[in-house]
Image (cartoon, rainbow, N blue to C red; front, side, top):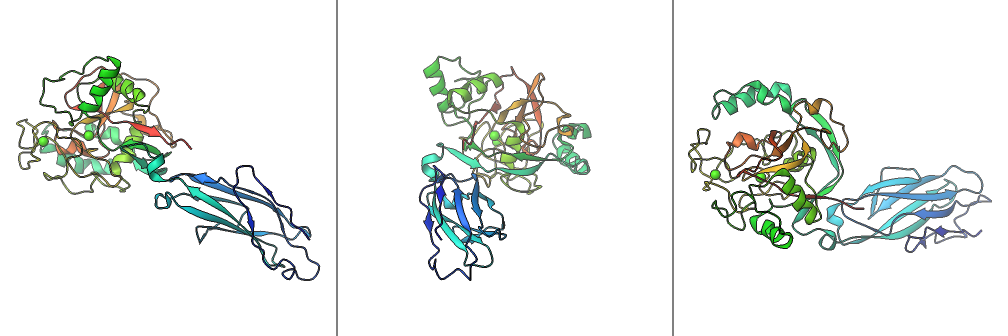
Length: 379
Ligand SMILES: [Ca+2]
Ligand SMILES: [Ca+2]
């Protein structure tokens, strides 16, 4: 008998591979019929893809399904399969193979090519893809005594209350997004000013901040306007914390649990005489360093710890973690303070902890607060 196969409009080429069509049938039992194979023809790294096959058996035999993508069998035996495109497959053409079996005949096998977009053509310049995923945000109450001990060396009057806004630790699930590899620089911000006539930041040309240093002295709103101008947005606090962790689990800093030395980040070290400077270590920078001076985290993001604090989009609420939604939390719906994250040249290393939260009034213009942008991944 003849199989009638309808291909979804956006499918590419469907190849029927049942080679011995006449010999594979046993007795009078009919073979399964594939009616439709539904899958995209082009996808991008990081994307979650759904494959579906519509098949029936003329004799009513129960059908089982085997999906194979790029030579690997997927775990499902259903007519629908979910598959995540890994970064490693960027730019490749692969095959999606579905085998439909009624247990009485040779399986009916079809194959369809799938093109993975290249990392280079789809990827925004100077951004990295932060993949869809989940993480544990914040700090456990039982970690607070240890945090108190660390903080005491810089601020002798520290209290447990300084860290309670990091609790409770809670699960957060986020959609993928692209994030700027570097903090926004003075040179980048100057392009924005030159093109739009936007007002200058505070400290512009009055501090020793070179073109490739991070811009500072900007209000939260200025960062929002800049982000819109470049077609991006500010990260939600949860997106920022997910990104700073770089895929590490339960670590104190973006590089792990090791206490800081002079080679990891720009913070208040012995080159600057503040009461809370770390007098034992030199990072060789009194104020900011050029963006990208220190090593990146495992996502390839530079200066998430130190150099300048970074504005996040959301309002600040010390109690937010107790009521934060699990999926894509965007912060409280109102407030007066905005979140800044990551520590700076003017604060001790303890401010660079990945879960540390700090708030500033949205009109503050500070010489230690800048920002970086993110961009949602458009399917
Ligand atoms: Ca420093
Ligand atoms: Ca920073």
